[in-house]
Length: 443
Image 1 (tube, rainbow, N blue to C red):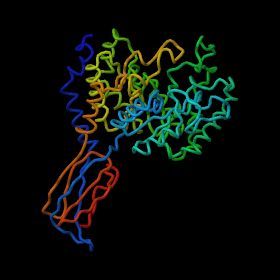
Image 2: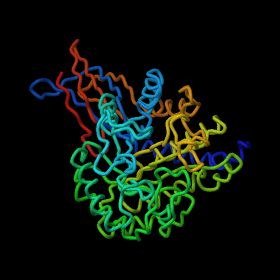
Image 3: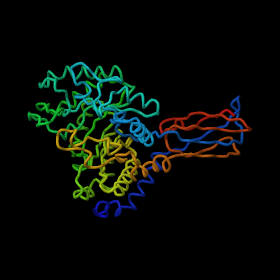
Image 4: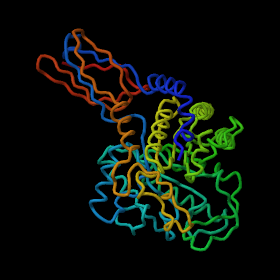
């Protein structure tokens, strides 16, 4: 495996890439904040020690959490949880219709629902995430590929069941689950009259739904979901089929927005499902910093936050994987329009297997996880841990002889302590580019 051929654009564009990464992070992920020292009457006082400790990022570093509690032993499940919360502050919960409602009217909301691997109930996800201060995202409300076998074939007859599903999920989770993928991969998976292939247990295609179904889906979803943010989620075409404003996905999104669709976030998937011998071919666009920035700059014109919503980078060579993922995260994190990065399987033992898919294909073939089958950390895990928790992290200890102190910090949640004359005042602060930049501490 030729390392230089795979990484050639990262190497060739190193100066350009590092300049844009560093300037972007300093400009868009950090801000200046001021703490004023006052007495009980609000009068300025001088001299204090100020400690600033970051607790979590405003930027969302996510992953699907489909394997929570799905392993055979308590030890394995504990290791999964430990590795997950060691990196991520957002988790994608499964809402695939075929497994969420395998029988008509019997939705699998609650813990204790019949077990389906990688399709854990949302209440199980929410319990874990509340305990660990992790935001939850739902995926997906509709995907034409994974629908129940009991659903009518006719599109018009199916609509009533679809709206029933939306209403039931919204009644529980509107605003509780912060965002939902509304339609998934609607430009990349053909809708045909084909019968399921032999051994295909849950994938099923409808007759063509037509170009208006994403518009209808967003209209209905916006009716029931008033608080959760809604995501349009698409797969490979944003990167490999990029033709600026004439890109198919760009035109679809723009058209939906012009028709009033409530698209709050534009999802750009990034799955590198390639065999080892074809890995280097991705370097032309998907491992090309200049190209990646062009794509993001273009989609930013839609005036919606962007999310790298699903990611797989092969781990055939773990050191190469670590270098690619590290560069990608740094590039994405530096872009002003980006608000989240969501990896798709935390470990090699978390993905769809060739046997389990029933399609003769499996994500496990690409070894794209951050951990190995025994939950040991790959180099890519260590690299991201260093980025998120050390390089992109603010911990400060400041002494001031005046009545205030300025400091620059990554956006996120903080614990701030001011100590003066042996007395301490500690507060939780949220530092955000759209929020308060000046805080008063009574000491």
